[in-house]
Length: 81
Image (cartoon, rainbow, N blue to C red):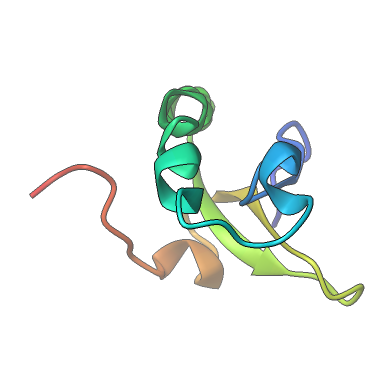
């Protein structure tokens, strides 16, 4: 079951989706790490995990998912070793 209180959002911020690819893309992308960290912390407080989910419209976005669903079992590195 999807968590209805967490909106879906694109992996790549809109400011980086415009124009052509530039060599400094990844450096510019890393500037958004704090935003992603806040989203992760907010999701944890709500008891959900964030996973990238493809939609029928062809977009890929992150959304909250209850911990007992199949998509939540997909493990990614979340800053813990």
